[in-house]
Length: 509
Ligand code: FAD
Ligand code: SIN
Image: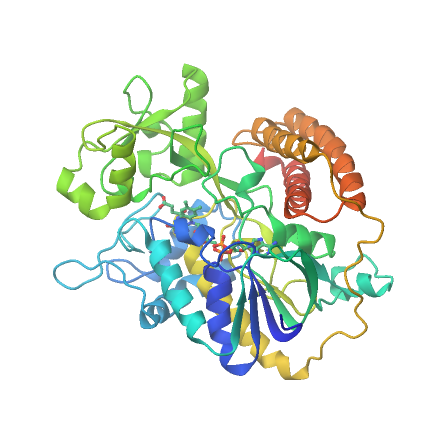
């Protein structure tokens, strides 16, 4: 493994891969990813990527919908920038080979999703993310300057703390020299030094019991930045997707894309009645925080475990053509989605907050950038507009790449960085301690810090999580490193930040 590179990228989803392609002509690039390169939320993205394409859509309308969904807690300058630069970055994906569906006339065939006032979601069937990921992987594998290290887990960022220097609590004093990376297959820990490091580790869905995110998504980047004294923002804004397929035994929860509602499907309660129109004039196509809260309320009122998605107004040929994977999934559970109602339930889906970055993707730690779901850019506010996430990831990968390239010639590698210190640790004998704390963390977050919150629930959650935190820190310090114990540590850190931020922002309760 190369130990000194210009650009170290942690994570191989849309953000990390796009950034790699953009900087690779000008320096050595190393991508570390904790599982296979294809294991990322990006691969699961169904609905598509939102970008203004044809009239009557306009930047103003997309900006308005983004602000409205985000309850105007967005950063307006960032919203303007992302929406206006969207079409150019989408073209870039197309140039690299991503194929989005077109109608017979040759025009892009656009979906509509919750909170959108126009059809503007470019997509590839119901597996847009897979199409994009495949395209990006092809590009990074073809580039001679990019090295890919699969099954390499980033444990912690390297900063002055590791040089034994005392760092004041101010984020701006801290500098990132790379990361300690655990090679899972060879059980060794590398000191990866980089002039610039990009965090692209995705969100934190697995802090909850039910999530649409794959198991690799455990908030690692955010927890690493937090421990390195970076600035973290808006973590209380966790987005629950209203329509995950109801199957409590399945991890991750299978998503039923909002684009089906955009094609005419509606949500019904277990008695078969519609109810969303009582909450918002847009009914089943209101922004997802409104829909998820209304479903949660209805399920509690009726004591039901799920509600239904009624897609019976869509004819079979259209359904099969537009949503082939969802059709196959429903059929595998004995449900014909065009004649039967599909049982659905809200599931933790997306993190609107994360590592705070400026408009260049720079975090508050020098030489550390963040992009994609790990980052808080200001685009989403309190709730992300559907299909704005892939868009944000490509825009900020581009911004971070441009800014990094303008800085790289001035930067040197960190000196005298000590290797990872695991003195005095012994093999963790009782895996049950980790498994149990993992379950308890998810239970606490689900029961007390879910869709509906209260001051009392948050206080309970914090009290209980603090006990688990202390137990796990003690275990972490004395045990040989494993990915599982590191991930648990990250989940606990992230859970703690979500609770603390929810407590300090009353409107999110
Ligand atoms: P990810 O794609 O999640 O990649 C994170 C990477 O980091 C992974 O490779 C992971 O293995 C790696 N990693 C994590 N921790 C470590 C570590 N410690 N060390 C090394 N590697 C690490 N958004 C849209 O805009 N449109 C959609 O239609 C859409 N549909 C979605 C459907 C589903 C089911 C899901 C789950 C999400 C969907 N989203 C959608 C959201 C969107 O897919 C994600 O926000 C986006 O793909 C995140 O990209 P990313 O590059 O930031 O992270
Ligand atoms: C979906 O297809 O419903 C998910 C879209 C998103 O998360 O943006």
